[in-house]
Image: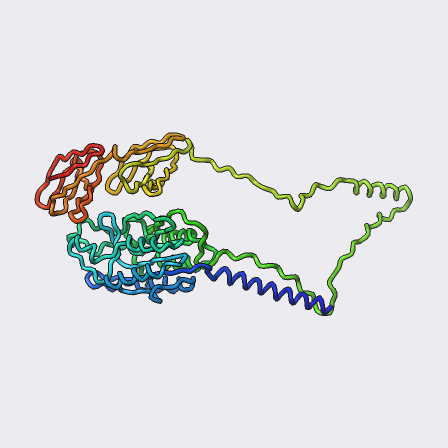
Length: 469
C-alpha cells in the first residue's frame, strides 16, 4: 500500500538525518580552543634542525581541523627572542574565555640547573648569565596558562634534542629536559623521557610529532588515550630507543580532539516493495496427531502428545533480568602502605629500590601521600638519592626531609662553585652566583670546587645551613 511505503521512506529520511546530526555533534567542539604552535629550525649560531618547521606546520593543520584557533593564524616559524616573547604574550592575551589552551614547540631545548629553556633562533649564549636573557623559560608559558583560568592546559614539547651549546662554558646545561610538575588542570608531554635526547627524524617529521598528529585525528580517543597511543607508536617506530613522557594533574571532565565516540544511530525499518501489504504471520493450529490404524494406537498417540505437552519448558530469563559476572583483582602481595614527605623540598620522586621503577612523586603543593606496595624504596631528590625507605603493610610512612639533608651557601663568592661528595667525588650541585639559592645536600662531608682552588671537608649535619665566608 502506498501509505505504508510513504511512512517507511519518511522514517528512513529521519534516521539518516539523525545519523548526520550525531556525526556532526561528535566532530564539532563545544568549547573554545586556542593554540600557539612554534617550530624553530633555522638557527643562526648553532647547528640547524631540518624538521621542526615541518612538524609545527603538521601540528598546526591538525589542530585547525580539530577546532583550535591558532595564535597568529598559523604555525609560527623560526622565531628570534623578541618574536618568541611577543607570541607568548599574545597567547596569554588570547586565552581568557577559552576552555582549552595548547602550546606546542619543536626545536632545540635544554635544561640549566633543573630549569627548562626553549631556544630562539637568535640565541648565542657564551656564559650561563646569558641564559635568562637569550632563552625562553617553559615556566613562562605555564604561568600564562595558569593566569588565564582555562579548564584544560596542554604543554607539548618536541624539544628534547641534544644540547646545542655544549662546550661554551655553560657547565650546568644538559641535553634533554628536566622533569616538570603539572599544575592543576594541566598535562605536560615530552617527546622522550626527561634527561634523554629525542630523534629529529629522517622522513621530514620527528617520530613524536608524526605519531601525535595521527592520534589527534582519530575520533573517539580521549585525552589520555591520545598520548598513550602516541607513546606506543613512537616506541614502535624507534625500536624502543625513544619513549615519550607525560605528567598531569587531575583533570576534570572528558576531552576529545576529534570528537567523542560515535553514538549508535537508530535502525530504520526495512522497506516494503511498493504496492504490497506488510507481511503478517497468523498463528497456526497445532498439527493433528499422526494417522494410526486403530483406536488403540490412536489413543496411545494422543496420550503421548499430552505427555510431551506437559513436559515443563526450561526457565527463560526475564527481559528485565541481567546476568552479571564478578571479577576479582588481587592487590600486590603483602598489601599496601603510603609515603609522605615533609620539610623543605619542592618534590621528591619515589622509586622501587630494587627495580628502579617510579612509584609516584610527592608534590609539596598537593601534599597527597603516595600509595605504594610493601617494600623498600629510594627517594630521588634533584641532586641526590636517599635509599632504604622501608614501608610495611598498612604503614603511613612520613619522611622528614630536614632530618636527612642540610644546605650549603657561599654568599660572598663571585663565581659559581661546584659541590662534590668528599668521598665519591660525585657532583651534588652548584652554587649559582646569580640566583644565590642554597644548595640542598644529604648529611655528609663535601668538597667545594672553586675555579682555581678547592675547599675540603665541609661537614653538613641534619637541618644545618652552612654558609661559607
